[in-house]
Length: 303
Image 1 (cartoon, rainbow, N blue to C red):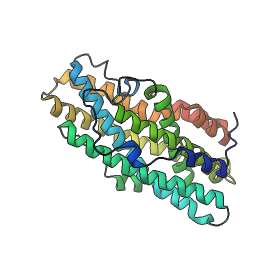
Image 2: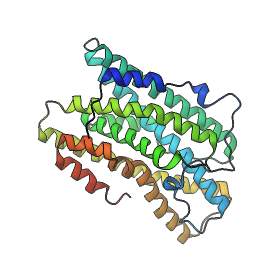
Image 3: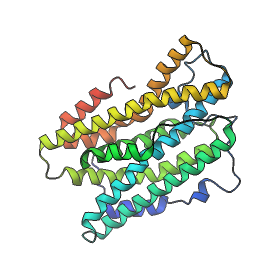
């Protein structure tokens, strides 16, 4: 496997994949709350057999809402990181500068899109759904780490997005068409972002010795640990939202089972599916085989 990406070619591909907010969220369009928003491979509601069919649909939609919000959170730190990466070499390579600015502009568009979808969700769902945050605090905590660690985290997220669309969303005909359209358009641009971030990882790693790269991978895993703690909190918030929307409090044993199944589902969605993605693993292997093995070992309990 050889990732012979270039700034010029990736910019050209990004222009072809570009779309407007109005393409994804037309005026007057509405979410269909009779249908699921996420594929079962991500939502994992079927194992919760103590929930009714309607409650499983509610939970799926709550998870879909959280999915958008979590992506909004991570793009709050991706945007300033990309801008900071572009700034030092402005003018040195015009293709690089334009590609990174295109990257940043698309991330800003995604944040805007997710906020608008969240407004549509809140208008139609009928119950409060809380999410972890605030975004500024999470962004500050992530950006406090080394540039290579942050770039690896972003690359993980981008390849994760590709896996979700291709392996779960694309062929699922049961999903709400509007929500599915959002995921498709997000995937279209993130496919180019994964290439750009691969180039950023390569540039940031160039000239670093193995001790420095090892330290950056350590920090990448620390960021993953921080996100994992947030997922535990989000699982509790999703449980509270389900009880509000469904109008009943689950018994203690069912609550315990819910938290077990849904925390594992969240861990796979946001951590395991990115850490084990073959393309992410390939980039880690280019940094050194030991780094690929360390991340695979860490991902072992997240499937």
